[in-house]
Length: 89
Image 1 (spheres, rainbow, N blue to C red):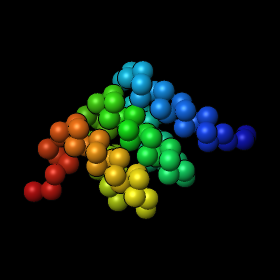
Image 2 (image 1 turned 30 degrees about the vertical axis):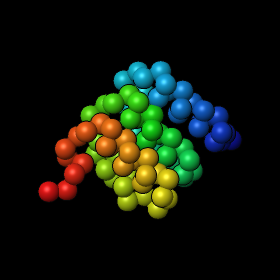
Image 3 (image 1 turned 180 degrees about the vertical axis):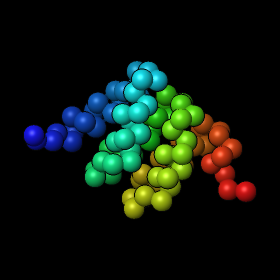
């Protein structure tokens, strides 16, 4: 099956705009496993728009991503969410 990364990127962004909690698992999977950094980065932003606490451990994990845009968007999202577990003691 052929992959369509630009369509997937658009879908990830749309899920964030919709803001439905049911999208969280899909977005976490994309943020963790997608090979395209722009999709991982967009998934971090989308998760922030939804605001699910369930995503916090996945966002913290992305602070070690190989791409700066992913790390940056994960950090910004964690900051906006205000979860104290994202801050090292």
